Image (cartoon, rainbow, N blue to C red):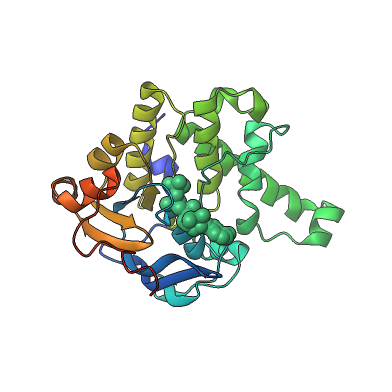
Length: 279
Ligand SMILES: Nc1ncnc2c1ncn2[C@@H]1O[C@H](COP(=O)(O)OP(=O)(O)OP(=O)(O)O)[C@@H](O)[C@H]1O
């Protein structure tokens, strides 16, 4: 991976100090189950924010509310001051990109083609332009390929550009997912368990990559069960327990909070979220 941040620089990078994401009172109910309850969370430009919590705490559901996969039952999500549109495609176009817990690559396409797919929200060429394949289409296609190659260099996958995605080792498939997400030129990148299933060396490489992404001006919100990864990388960490935010703070604050430890061990504690579950 290169850390030459000028080449990797996102074209949607935020201005310093800007609030990129502002989620307020986000609640998501599925029938009788409240998976996320009244969660507030902000992410500022240049920040890496971690979202942790025991299994089933509502982390992925919350992510889905930030990316248009779900429309929250209550609450509001703003990206750079504007309320998010209700579909994933429009959310990506607005500037939020994500990766998923389970790898979702096009296995029989090449590494480069997978990144090119990620650029579809940034290419203006319409249906007829693509069918007629005139000079404008070719110029746009060339520019997209150049940007995709730039991103592959940024994440360290240039030598694999022509390989089929299915032939990449597991860790590189996850890296490719990140490159594809970056191809939409986001201002905020959401990573859902980016190191799941990785060996320690791949995890360290991913840590470096996330730092380099932040270095390009893209804010990052990351769900991860690897606590070492979270506490060494994140500027701020929010803890979800049974759909509610238990605590938010810097790594030392969160690590030292006994309620966090109790929640992970499944031990009851005073005023535990979800205790009166008939609310
Ligand atoms: N589409 C859905 N319909 C009904 N219930 C759902 C749906 N999606 C999630 N849930 C429920 O919401 C709760 C929160 O799930 P979620 O996947 O968001 O947790 P999580 O914190 O991401 O867990 P993990 O760390 O295991 O991935 C769980 O009880 C889950 O079963």
